[in-house]
Amino acid sequence: MGLASIPSPAQGAWDIGFIPIRAYALCFIVAIGFGIWLSERRWRARGGEQGLINDIAFPAVIFGLIGARLYHVMTDWQTYFGPRAIKEPHQALFIWEGGLSIWGAVALGGVGVWLACRRRGLSLGAVADTVAPGIAFGQAIARWGNWFNQELYGSPTTLPWGLEIDRAHGGEPGVLYHPTFLYESLWATALGFALVLAGRRFTLRHGRLFALYVAGYTFGRFWIEGLRIDPVGGVDHAVLFLGLRINQWTSILLFAGALVYLWATRDKDSEEVVVARAG
Image (tube, rainbow, N blue to C red; front, top):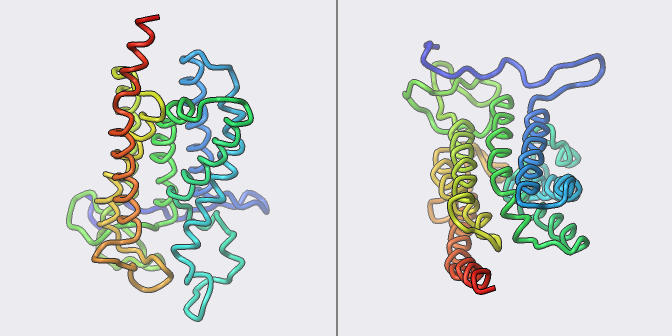
């Protein structure tokens, strides 16, 4: 393989005594930790109570992990169940083998945040705006777990940054693939910085910064998803509907929903400024 390519790791796990250390899990731990740290700093900078984000993070992470795995299993159920299953049903619980969906993580993780906010009498919109950049940066870090697992790669490419995939993970000798994990990591990183800057430059409250995160992420995810060739649904090809993958349709729906929310709440922040000045 030429020098102008991205090699995949020779292994994604290491045994320390009888304990296996998996790079995929480590990437998620670092991603969660960084997201919480950044969100806590942003919350305190806004005058919030110290340690509050750490308290909210516990139910959010637990609910998020459950949601992430549920979405994966629901959209890839034939991998674990049915006559064409390539894994045992109980392996649906093995999250360290890969298969955590951001859609399920944000959806059910949001339920965890809502419950924590309700218990403490906090504004869900204020918390959501605070954690939005941290989620984006966390996604950027977590995507490197896919690199270690040699999964979720794109179609063959002749670009100099093509990704090497070994035969055990579906690659062909001499063929390079789009490093979609890297594309999404870079996109999420840029989005994280954009959200921080937007939050400083504009008055974006009432969940509007979070809606901007949803719109920005889904916009990038749509075209990145279109490059992928991995199966969805436990079959030897991606399940398509009207020529698009399931996750592309999810991106379209969420992108449209975020734009509708931004439009419907476009006057909220300006009204708040007018009230504050009048007072």
